[in-house]
Length: 308
Image (tube, rainbow, N blue to C red; front, top):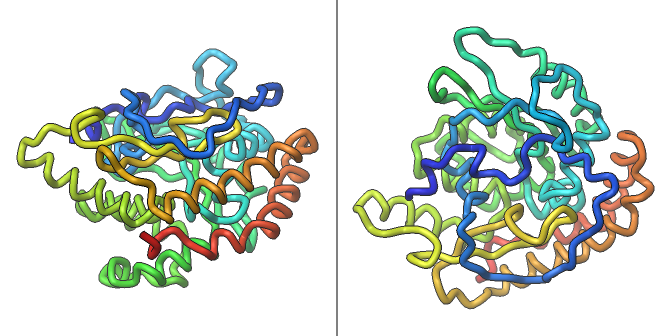
């Protein structure tokens, strides 16, 4: 899969932290299947990406190293993008990449990672776990680091549903979220793709397709947009495409799981946009998101896996 070798900076559209406080919501499309050139999102972490992205700051500012990341910017970046569907309802057990940094293996400076972990404290409670993942593999002496958030109950349900995949790794519904993330990062390639696909909340058919297409690419078959796949995009506040995105075969007819996922996401996004103006500090933002989660958590319990 050629896209699996792309750099992380190409793979994820949200460079750094998106302040986005005054951004207008784009026009919504409830369900789209397209063939974009930027089919990077599905490949971002499924590839076990190890390239080094630029140092991270709020996206409106020039790229430079920072050791103080405002909690409000982190929470807003998460909620304005695909992590909304983790925070409010658990449609996605895990979302990642709303902050990105890097670590020099030979001369490591962990001050920024430490600061981000501290700022993520507002998203650590009985409902969510948030942390920074430092990827195991290094590229040219640099390791990538991504902030992530996990919906604890959604993670446990997903692991139970796919017990046959997780059990050989000693992972159970009670395994700590950080341990799950660390184990998946170190899995063999095909298992890593599948593990991240489940974590990111893609329908089972999309995870199966992605893994099978990746293995097929090893045989030299042509892969890529317009060749062997197209994409389904779930809109976010920040953008209609390129965030909660997954690959499907050309000519794919939306399944019940696809339709249900899009419909549930629409409900969550509309409710978030109604409340977003109230989210003026990190604690109040987290409280509002917890209220949305309580309202929509039953949608996450419906799941997207077993229905074809």
